[in-house]
Length: 272
Image (cartoon, rainbow, N blue to C red; front, side):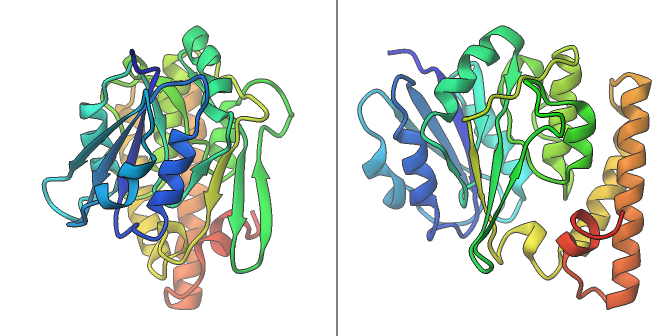
């Protein structure tokens, strides 16, 4: 049976959540999936996910050459192992809503890429936030990819981005989405109902104590690569403006707090 989509998942110290993430992948109906789980540590994740595979699906396990190589490296190792032409992204502490892949696949077949709403769940405050296009349209604009400061994990044909995930320390998902947006000719379908469930936790990069330092390094890397990317000039200008703004916000927060500020309050939710 052919595989419809390969879901690539980096995992680092994710034993508490990887089962939930894998269950959300293998619970699909009408879609055959391969989960390519790349360990970025020394854990045997087969112990936590094999029982959920089910008929018609495939589990592929791999690992980075060195532990703690980072999410981009782990995703690219997984990407090299993926058997399907269509790639979906899922972090080991997140999950898919039941119909996400089924709803997105027809749009990927037509346009090469698609995504849906991101539901952010904060277990500490019990608050939810949903990211979707500000114009409530059927397509995700480039400005929303860059300016909303929320992830929009893509489902895409891997031919659109043969180089895979950029080797940067922060916001690499934004740059991949910009690459996909440009490769798809500026048409990025957005499908209501195809939710990605984004669980905040203290171990995530954007929620960790050193998130501001990581963000600063990542933003500098992004600003360095802008002129080397094969993007139209208006795209370069937008990406450069947004990440210069975010870099300035991070540097102000680092000075004001001595490094103790939260990335969300400093960049995403702070005064623009």
